Length: 560
Ligand code: ADP
Ligand code: MG
Image (cartoon, rainbow, N blue to C red):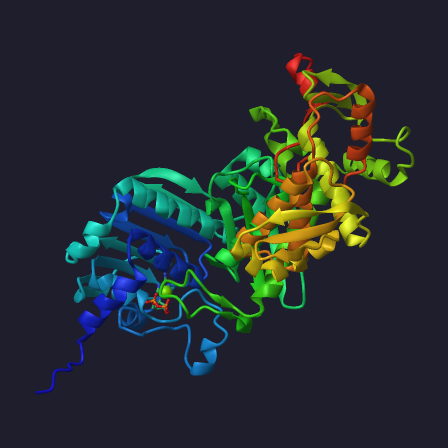
């Protein structure tokens, strides 16, 4: 007996709904994407009880005529693609013609739409058309979705509390709004306005509306490209951090995407400026040839496949770290209190004067004792050095500062291929594990850049005959730590990252912390720090110093 049936439309729609609209957020995503595709200038979203009760999306887009208004709910009905060719360069958010029929199969939908001449109402309940008639309506489309999943209890059970669903929707709408500053968004949850952007087209204004004034003030515009990709957006100064990746916003050709590799590239760009467990706030909109991007790989289109992803990865991390290096000024390292009266200042460009002065000073720097940037004032508790320059007073963490200096010095030696070495009178014999022994070749390959070579000595030990001169004190612990780090870190492969990491490990392992520095030693440390290209963070992201600006002093002493 044959057992295979062809499923009816309603069932296939419900199955598709399982993938496309897993939860209320998925419905909001599909509806808002439709509004974007309809060229809306304003999109209003209203949810009740996290969207479980109802979701309404109202737009002022192109609307539909009376034929399309019902066609839209048929499976695989779309106005966005026509032939196979189109699938290779998709320029709209939607293209499968699945969302509306899927949503309508698991909820009650009421749509009014007007294309400027026809105005139509369509009501569908759990896949069945209940009503289609002309109605008076404003141009655009208004879709109300109620009772989502009431007839699909298994799905309903998986939903979280209204609050959790609301936050997911809020996060989604924020991300979409940041990818589309040219559209005005409003999100109401249980009739309360939760988010609003003005649609002026200014990304910085959208950032302010969503993340607040302080974040917008600390945002650096960024724009770079290579042959295939153009990236634009804002990096928020690393002085403001978050505990998760949720604030790393990436969109590709207007589509909000989740891409772990791209997130990682961004985090890599920030790495020097941030503790490993903290994450930046970033808004980047990437534009690429539509043909380089395959959006048809994920049911709800969160993930995409990017050709030349590796190139994009380096483009992002390199440009981000360079921008941060160039632009981070001491005043960016201090989160200042902002009084409400200052609200207009945020859109002004960086103060070029301060930056120029800093540059000049670096360029004309000649000898240690004369034109150095940080000038010695004193010491505190044997741990901190007090210093000043033209702009600020600094409280410098000795240990972090030493690490920074070592790091840059080692990095310089590595890039100049000029790591100083010293032969050992007696070779150093170090016990290692069989697993490490197995990886000896890889370890040596990594360590080559600091002229360190481990020779097999016995089945479980290696010999070292020469050491870089920057290693002082416990050489064995130093080499051991390098071996462990390399064997534990499987990702260390790209040449630059490798060099940076080796330098960071080397300095970490080699800095011997002398708890008390003489004034002479402190001065020498300040001279070294003055020569650093990025003196404000240690290589592991911790700040090396606090800066107190004149302006802050004036404020503290109530002179302004
Ligand atoms: P897709 O977006 O993949 O085409 P959907 O099921 O989401 O599929 O929508 C089907 C069609 O309905 C769209 O192609 C579009 O023509 C029309 N449509 C849906 N929402 C809107 C809207 N808000 N404004 C105008 N047209 C819309
Ligand atoms: Mg769609």
